[in-house]
Image (cartoon, rainbow, N blue to C red; front, side, top):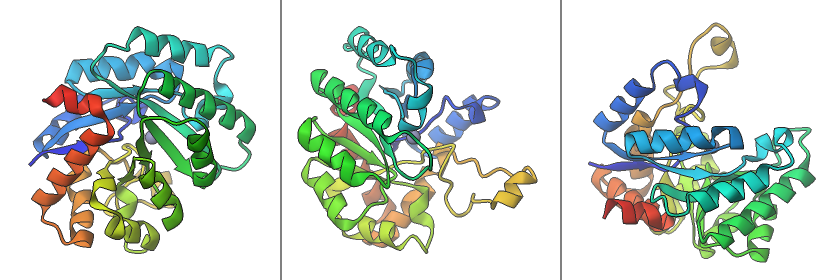
Length: 272
Ligand SMILES: [Zn+2]
């Protein structure tokens, strides 16, 4: 069985000591492809090099939690990188971009400026976008109404039914991962159950968003216990989706892989 992890920060420091082993476990678990989104100009080279080194794919963008430390020229740097690598078949999207209205004290105006500018770049380069959506779905959708892009993935989606439906009607897929494995995640599980099947893609967001079996409380983490997530967990995370939909694991793999390829056309071109 083959799986695609549509969102994993494999370049993160958490994987610094054992990245090759993490990848080997992912491959052994059937995770055949992994999308590596960038978060700031400083990791553009890292995600591109990792993708080329391991036959993976990547996205370039500036994450909303990184805009405050971005330099004035970083949007131009992104534009230049997209231009320079526009013929790189492993560059599949602009991302991770978006808005975070959950973390307190962030500069929302600055986030919005980066978001809209990066949507324009996605439009210019005809690339899909990988969106960070955290209490910000309505404002993100307003941006997509102003600046139409070819679609993409709303990653770690945790919005309302109405918001989900509008993303889907705009051709977006919604990313489901570790959060879906928690029984108390009623809204996420309801979305996973009722959305049209072509809207669903799977992701780990590793090293973040651990599934329940990796989750450790803040106190446990303070004691040094790790809740690090990794792409090899994807098939077990997928079991939650399979159960919610009444699908077999094979159905779940086939459907979500087809959806990931539809969301990221260059990924489909690469594997054909
Ligand atoms: Zn991310």
